[in-house]
Length: 132
Ligand SMILES: [Zn+2]
Ligand SMILES: [Zn+2]
Ligand SMILES: [Zn+2]
Image (cartoon, rainbow, N blue to C red):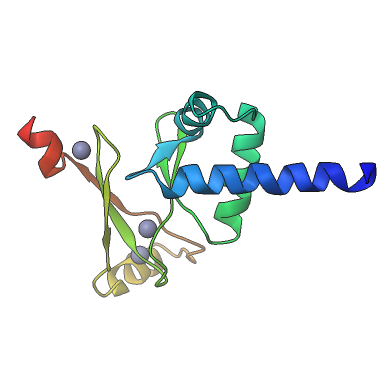
């Protein structure tokens, strides 16, 4: 059974990363998630956490937003294209169903661009953090 061990371990690691991400109330960095996993007793390397998060994002199971230090990750309610209202102190996020996005297409068209993707996130302070 030596041959199946690595794949089993990879699956277990992916599951651990998934569960840690799912139990997180807001967007987290790979570093923070790694610290949580290690604190919980998981033996998983930071490189693995990065790899598994990237895989989850590629599968559409996790959302990402760009941050100064890299990407932040979160498990989002399924439901297609949306944006986020993100707390800058704790990472808690609210999903925003975008209004008509014709202006994005129009703006790009006016400049002769063909859109391949767009990123639009709103940052602020959540009620919990504001109350502190
Ligand atoms: Zn989302
Ligand atoms: Zn907050
Ligand atoms: Zn959009």
